[in-house]
Length: 283
Image (cartoon, rainbow, N blue to C red; front, side, top):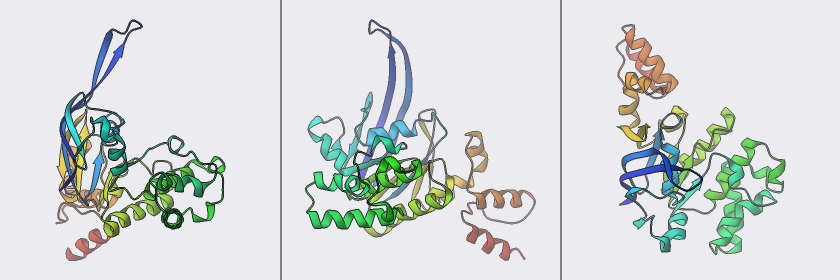
């Protein structure tokens, strides 16, 4: 079953003058079709201005298509009567945590969503503890979010969405403000949510290593999907990714350079472990 289905989605930003007349139209999404099956881990890549964040906002009904249709959990995002059902189905984590944090105490902020969903009090506190531990913020549960660093705030905002246990979680560059250690912790928690809870994950990121374990990757450029496939398939095409001004995971880059120098390595090496194993075969 598709948890998300985008059919020929077009989205245009229309600039208007003081009298309300259109002066300029920018096409941010250009006939985008993406389907996401229940339980999948999907990565969406692209440089700034590629349309990936605009697409993410459509999945939570923050934006609506100019043309085409998006279904989330079988619901048309344009259906006003289904707005809160769509947002309960697809939880959204924004790049800027200040857009999501509203509580005066960390644990109260994380528990805000489940409380509004009518979750029993005992279970709310269980979810709060579970979610804060997953993002390495349990020791800050009694702190004020206003006294946290940007990276710490982001972990709290992620925990707040995790605590709501949505069927699908959409993360728009959630680790952009975290240090490498924090990034690994959060990505590990997201992967665990996908592996254990079978939650659908749609991760939009600039960090290629964060999607090497995804089921599928979509690469966007100028509002269009220009590449799609498994991580192995997408990252095997280094020349195309370079033309799109995108990098590849470190081990993939090293393998590519060694292969150009004559070492018989296969395409699509994604991890350091794979790289070491394949190099040993060449001895």
